[in-house]
Length: 397
Image (cartoon, one colour):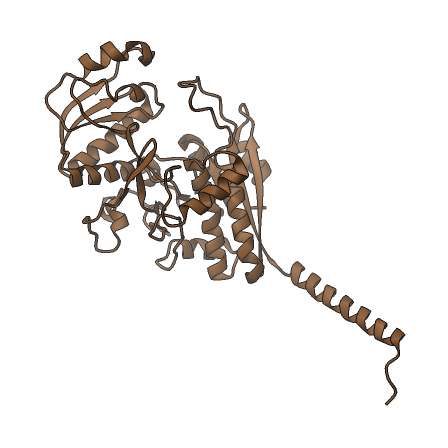
């Protein structure tokens, strides 16, 4: 047999390389595409309440970007490609019109970072009916109950879950007598309702309830007003409902009696906090900070989980069909790692993501709820918030 000449060897090698490139190109083209939209609206810059915390205009979007990278890392091995497109409605823009025009039929999965009233307006659009909306911003109990929509899944813990987390820790400490102080806004009233529900649920006693009606220049009036304002019957903890932070920060160390502060200030219940370091949290904290140049906020974490939930469901089902993914996400088989010890999953009766809730002081992690000893027939995570028998949501999966 005559040996293969050098020119022929080169030709064979070239043909082999071309073959490999063509195979890789075909495989690349054959990847299953999962398109995810991130939909939000510009926020009006609120009046500064403190020089310590600068306004962050892009909460959420950076978390979704980090998650899409993680999805595509897995997608390299599963033959799937995840594509994220961001839509930011101007401050004076129409959210419904923008959703119809921009999101349209291209995206089956939409991470929504909007307030409650805008979220339901979007969810009720005909263009949204066949989509899966992942709410990365609201904490309203009503959206998980009488105002629930069957095309919306909620990522952040609602107010009831947060209040229950605080109540469980208070039971552990045997701090059972509460003094509740409520701000003047509608959000403060809703948080106060969640606190009252938790107090009744866990056997706490509301010694006193007052509405803060003093000037909001609390730095000037705190020393005189707070001491007089807090002269009530004996109590174990002062529970504050001040979601905008207009006065709550100035209650600590100024009360008539020496008592801890919990609620929206002091010891707070949250889905994410910069002091959280367990269960691999340091890793994602550092990754996010390197990318964003700041700490991860709650809405960043929620948007991260929303995109990762779609990625996890797509990987497990090997599908990009929205109905298949939604069914899987609402099933008992779905489990999402959230850097909080227990796997996270969605409640099939209201679309709420069940998850541990962090109890944090400004510079330290105090506890993680559910607190040990609180039991449930299915999962201890359902001791937080509205369990299935309590739910007034009327949609099914």
